[in-house]
Image (cartoon, rainbow, N blue to C red; front, top):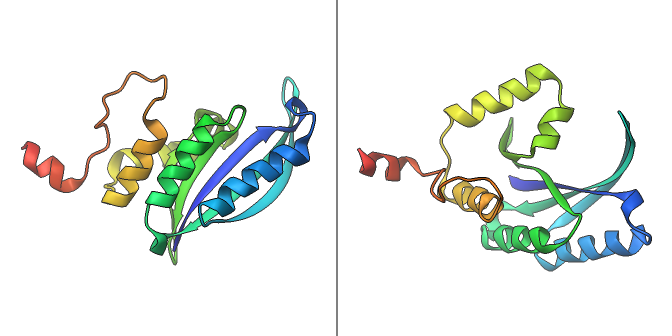
Length: 156
């Protein structure tokens, strides 16, 4: 069981793609993760060439590595967190998806992800990861948008 982060950047916006890619790889390995790299090309209104780096962090290492990695990624210009999910033995739990990621999916999959997000509960580790991604974003939300079940019961 591990946490997976899908990061992307536009290849055309970097003169030295290899150098930027190595910088991201160094960030992943510095925080105790492993990585996989793939390139994609989309042709909508514009041609878009992306490098997608999937970073994997073992759940046994705790969430401190994940949250510090998220903070470092957020400080890196032109590097985007597309999705964060937790792999379990027989299923995948989506913790975070960007708007761009949801728009790239087919309608049924995007709707299913949105519904699961509304109806599920999160563990304390998952809440820490979600808050690390959503804190400091431009959205006008309260910081305690995602709370644990125990905190919810205390509010009642």
